[in-house]
Image 1: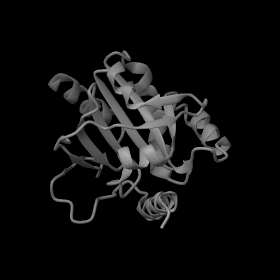
Image 2: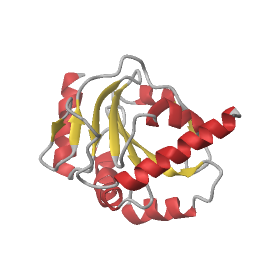
Image 3: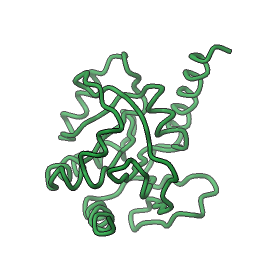
Image 4: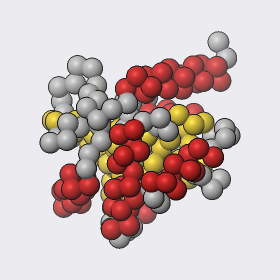
Length: 191
C-alpha cells in the first residue's frame, strides 16, 4: 500500500476514534496511570522520553515547527475538534489563559484534529473567533499526526511540554479555568 494512503488511513482512523471519543469524561481504555481531576478529566504525569518534533501550518498559512516550544518555558497543546462541545466550551477560558500569562513563561497551541491542511478552514476560523481562542491553531497533517497524535484517543486532549519539547503531563478531557490555572502554575513551579 502506498505510504500516502497509509497515512491518510491513519488520519481517518484517528478521526473515527475522535468522533466517538468527544466528551468531558473521556478516559483512555484501560487507563490506570493517570489520576482523575475534580472535573473528571484524566491527568497523566509520566513525562515522555523523547522530545516532540513536528512541522505544520497555522490558520494564517505560516509554517510552525516544534521550535515553537523554545519560545516559552511551558507550552499547552490542546487537541480539539470542530464537532466537540466540551472542546468548544473550554476554548474561551483557554483564550483568557493565553492572555493572562507572559508568553516567555506560558503559551497555548491548538491543534484542530478534524480539519486537514489544505481543506476549507472557514469553519475553524469562525469557531476560533466565536470562542475568543486567540492563540496559535494548527491544522492536521502527517507530521503533526505522527509527532503528537498517534496516542490520542479522545478530544479534548491536552499536552504540556517544556521548552525542549518534552511532554511533562497529559490531560484527557475538558477542565474549567481554575483547574487549568492550578495545573499550569504547578508545572511552572516544577520547571
